[in-house]
Figure 1 (tube, rainbow over the protein chains, first blue to last red):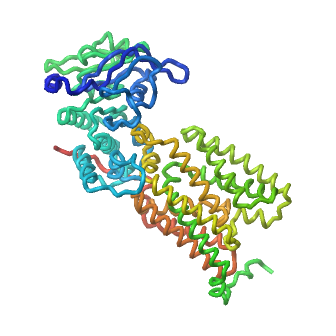
Figure 2: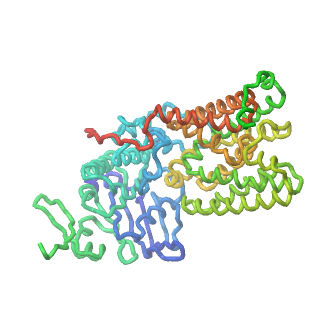
Figure 3: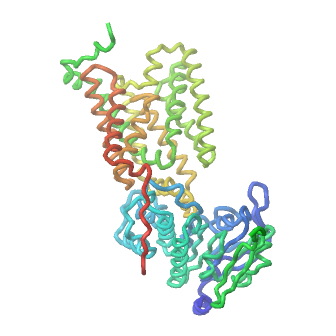
Length: 271
Length: 291
């Protein structure tokens, strides 16, 4: 389905992300190197790898917050630059820093006008876009509440509303499912799938658990032995690769319906 | 004779209110209340309360140092507050780093203040007025400086408001969106230093919270819309300063106590009325949203 969508827009859309021999250095240490891959426009990509492998760092590269130490990098057909309004970003632990002092609606509005200096009222057109974004993620009912009054799943929805309010073409979400219960995880994943289909937006999701995301993922980038690798999701969900990647036995289960699961393959020998 | 017997309502307190020094105090106090009320929201959202407190103390050696070399106290306060603010602002973005740096600078500043005070053989009343403020002794020169500072704070905030709110409540996304988070942080600390320079002279180093943090904290219990918080905080700060001056004229005691008490009373009253909401917010139940 996604491949079809990509074919319909053959030459107009540049790839979301192109890396050629990119390496990243932070604090004098190489985080990862030899990054060479292309994320096509309209893909839904899981970014996986053990803790500290440099998943968030990849987002920082794309956002222009961190320069590549070497190699060539292109985001949506142009060199990365800070403040790229075509990218929507939801950082990890997004809601931890917020709370008391801001209403959901105002937070989403900042995604649209927060960079603007000078006194100017929010225009009716801007308010309408904020309402649309809140409506789209299903947050309309609590739009006027403070962020601190919401549950984790609700806060995540508001964060996504802020990321899409300016019609981003590329969404970068860092651990959006962390600390969510099963139902909220599924609802956020469904929302991502819907956004992907409606807007043909490219989505990159950092996750440590692939399972809840498998229904929507088309590709994965995995950070193995300090190099990023990119492949179709079906190629990545393999026992040998995942076991190597996580450094612990991982099994892959395929049901008769074609559903795919990964599971920890370690069993208690006493049982 | 006990000190308490000295507390009596003055029969001529309305005349005292009309006197020139009271007019100075009203004007000076109002200017400070406006600047402090406006900045309060940011002090709270940026978790800068400790830095605000420290800046007031950092002003102490500035004031005593100025006495030592015979310079105006306001100038000494300002130079030290701005320098201290920039220093704190330059220290890491991580709150823990900043807290430790702030605490260390604070201790050094207080030590310097004691040293300068003893070198300048500043008398106890000068030191007391730095520590507790002396609103009733605001001079014409100080009023000019206060006016300039308040205009600068209000004007700068008008330009920076939106990006500063963004950078304060949501720094990571703001940075990704191209908001100059670091530069805004420095600009904010300088505005805070200017405001604290004034506030120290009104309520003193030790009581500064009552004008910079408490009114905004009270307002935040009532609303979370940044413009409304700012307006409400300014109103509360103004009310505290005016009420404090009237009470101080009535019983002929220093206004600092009354200004602080009124601000704290308002905070307690709002706290009591709004209950525990906000302190431990109860999350809304997740509701299913079919599309």
